[in-house]
Image 1 (cartoon, rainbow, N blue to C red):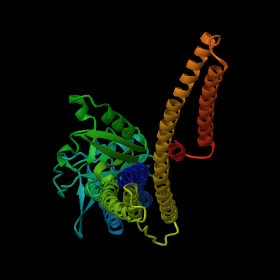
Image 2 (spheres, rainbow, N blue to C red):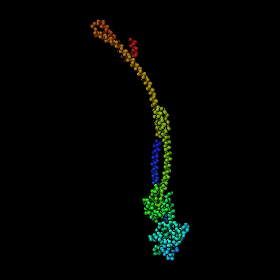
Image 3 (cartoon, helix red, strand yellow):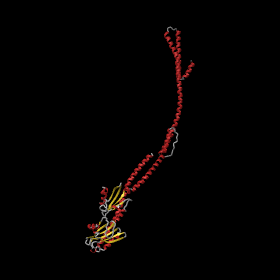
Image 4 (cartoon, rainbow, N blue to C red):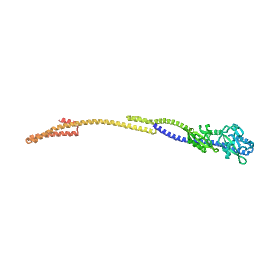
Length: 482
């Protein structure tokens, strides 16, 4: 019974835990997706707010530049001012077409750069650094609209040394006639992007990546992949449909998440594009990190379940043994009763459950059985006594029958002689009655009558013996009569 109870409880526990773990895993997964999505949204919001602030600052500065376009020296002040009021910016260039300011020569770009707490300003441009040929100048100039250029690293310009990788928000500058005459560029350090995006860690081992327009890695924990590799590079050596789908989704500006299978484990990649640029940021989370709460819950619940089942098994055994102890005692009493001990004492625990009713019924049965057995024993003793009496009567009857038989045989023997004599007399009379004298005939007749009376007397004695007396008594009478 304990084993069956334990097996049933294990089955119920396993079923309940299986359902619990199934829905817990779904809940943990949904919570992890929600957490990663919120982290990604928060990071994007923070970055986009910063980018928006940069764009607003650049638009305001562009208006001031166009208002003071006739005074080239004011450009240095404006370039420096925008950095002072926007601590996230690391550089600002106000560059104009060649010879736009005849007095300044072919090149004129008022450039300011932040280095720690210091801001350096210079006139940028030379034959070694023709800024108007750079992407940050040409693309917004030709598109006639603001543009975020891909991150780049400046080479030696002969002036202020810029070592970090930067990305720039650039917009065309117009003269009084609305003609494009230059470009205003404000710079953000990619290190700031990397630091801001890398802080988005919803889980301990998660990391973030930032893709440029063509899938180039702009932010990646492996610095060797920055700028020189794209998300599609590994697919050139080995076909990987999952990675291709992820790269295409990010490059196309889609949002969502995908699961990548790498080295026997699953990686959940949550991605979303920036509104202000064509870049896309992603948070890569190891499945083990996502399901760590679930795995911890599973370990704790498994341990608790094992301990609980062990205690349950012990309690079941103890409780069942305690509750079935009266049954075991009743079983022993039934064995003793079956061996003939009808007067055994049945214990009464004063229980009110089924076992108590069974004890009470068993006690009633035992007393009733003992009473009936005692009655049966008394009846058996009486039957034994009567059997002895019957045996004696039977023996007496057999003796009386033997005596009667002997008496009858004796009487028969006694009657045979008179009968024989009567037969002889009859033969004599039948054969010689003519020769007999009357006296002789009378003598023969008298002999016959005498023998007949003898037979009659014997028959009367026999009849009296059958009706009134025992053969022994009649025999005694007969003997005395004789």
